[in-house]
Image 1 (cartoon, rainbow, N blue to C red):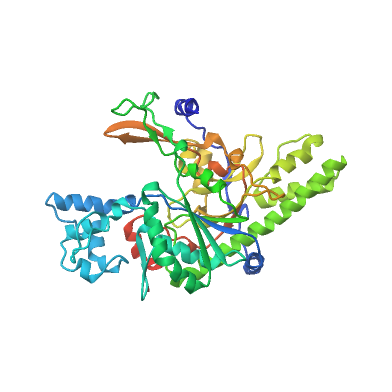
Image 2 (image 1 turned 90 degrees about the horizontal axis):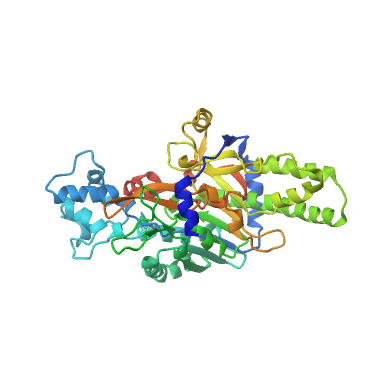
Length: 484
């Protein structure tokens, strides 16, 4: 395994060959009102097991990067620049959910920041919030009339509204870091009974950690193993692609996947709930057709007969729903080939119109076997020296907000081995440092990128209001995160 990673450093990862950017009418489905209503009704009538999967191990340190810089400046005897982000934070401190008059009244700029990101005492003598060393999920995001909620709590609320199984249980699985699992469990102990009573549901909350065996060796710039001061090789986490193992362990007929920081104040949650149901209803529609075709192909192959009309119908379905165009396949193996193309995990992904927000993009790409498929790509996977690639990038209309609904069981009800559907040639290599020394780090194919490369994929346009990430603490000042 280690040899494979070293070889990846040496040869790098190939750029993907694009057919086109996925756009409305060509790769992105735009559902009208009737189609939306049908999808919602289909999902509302579903009686299977639903699970909400929330990657929540990410640290909040980057969210507070500007405050660390501001604190350093203040510690050095400098004031905060009038147009700095740290200045804006301090000036608006009373608009954040973690503010209280008794804790912040009379504090200097330095003490305000240090109380939020570090160990500095509040005005009332309370210990620091230490948000700079905690995960995003434990940060208070939203204020309400009689309570404040962390990002993690907002996922509990969301789950009650669209991810409730037929038995009234809301199954939520979060990936967390071992150091912070106890903090999430504390939040649950303090809040879950309140939300169960409020929404008339029961919660089944479980946690898992990123498997340490997915860590990847780091190398020097000459691709030799990077050794720490004690002479041992340095291993680094393999990125969110490592969470594929956690996802594979989840038992659910429908799995909603969404990042921990993409939540909205409950006063605006209606659109989020509706579109989650739309995506799930679309998934159920597609899965139903796939199951019907796979059973028909089983009968066809068992009988040893030919049915060109059925095969053409399946090819048209693959093209229409998944943008899968086929290479020339010998007639005698076409049923088996189509069976293999259909019998895969399914994902329906919401895509938002470009508004300058960060995120990878939806594209149609060429696969190794000559067919085409829909993929979510990051900039590092695109050859920016290729004119046609740059033109396609400029022509892209949507980006990926990580709004995914998955089916990970086959038409016979068996769980897929998700590792079989990963494209190992889609990892990432980046330059990092350790104790002041430069190194190269490698990440596994991204969870919604190469790790799902060989899934059957549908892209659906969703409105911008469903995407409300908190990448910096100042994002919490946006209207979507404010009480009014």
